[in-house]
Length: 472
Image (cartoon, rainbow, N blue to C red; front, side):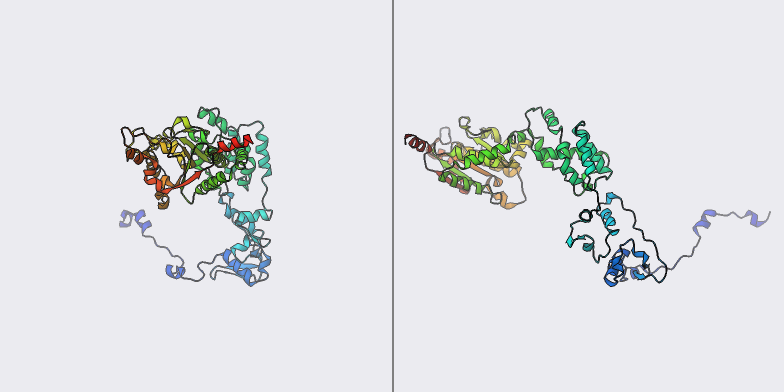
């Protein structure tokens, strides 16, 4: 046996030590510093449209028939002989704007910038999709709208929601937001009944916006189970979390359970019945309700001056806009407004208060949500309650409704508009074994809140005026 036969060959080592020849590579910095490094076939095509009249007669897919791409120089040159067949890479509908851009590249022949591609009849469209629709390059989705309408005669709302979600997943809809706008009355079917059962409240009423949000939430849940989300469809509305929380909030639903059309008609009837003095007070209160101002008022009146009439007008005015008004009173015997409650019951004010006390609404997220959405609070018989009650509510709202806006924080009650009613000639706060000065010191006028109040007075006795008219 020879020495060669005894030699052991290490194939792995031989493979590691192998060498190969390849094309010469330029230095990376030199490549990145080339003036043409940012040029692509697409941008060079638009530049070519500025130079050649022939180029402006060709779409992007037709361009290779007359021009050839010079890779080294990164620009298009006219063909000297022959031609090529152009092709635009496939783009699925899931890519949204890129998909619509691809459609336009097969139709637009003379763009010199990206805006020119979106321009139709001298109007620059906001998106490539809008440009496609304006050029009638997309279907109108009528067949899918009709399919949902037809299914609504026999199918449940849950089935319709899953059907709509399936259309989204398969990218069958060119304008899903348009289909949503035309079919949402069918898609919300069963939402109210489901909420009534879950909350054990057969008299529950939900606003249109809440029903839409809950339907969108059902569609979103279906998409999430299939690894999709409504976020993938930029034109589709997304469920508003605050509205969803509100719709499942029993206390919120109680405050919004009214007919807005009836409230609007009632407001018009009451407004024309206000006297000149009452209208002035009403206008001042509505100005205070401007969220940009963040102020609140105090209405001091004697009995029979028409304060209840003004407050009812205020309530229906705010309620007709589907906003929340809380009507409270210092004692149960003065609950004259609709849905009125005592202040202690509504705001969970403790019975035994100190200078540092707070309300217990912080322990109830549903009531906290109501307070954040409330636009106006009407508090009757305010002078007869201890100033610590108002200060406790002020302190609590600043804790619950925390805001990054320091200006809002400096306003009492975090800028919530509160209309206090009553008169200091009536019963003042009861201070056990207190002197006259103790009682005065316990009243609202002695609180730091008083300096931010705007006093509005009613002077005309409406009962006497009615009596004079009757005698006439």
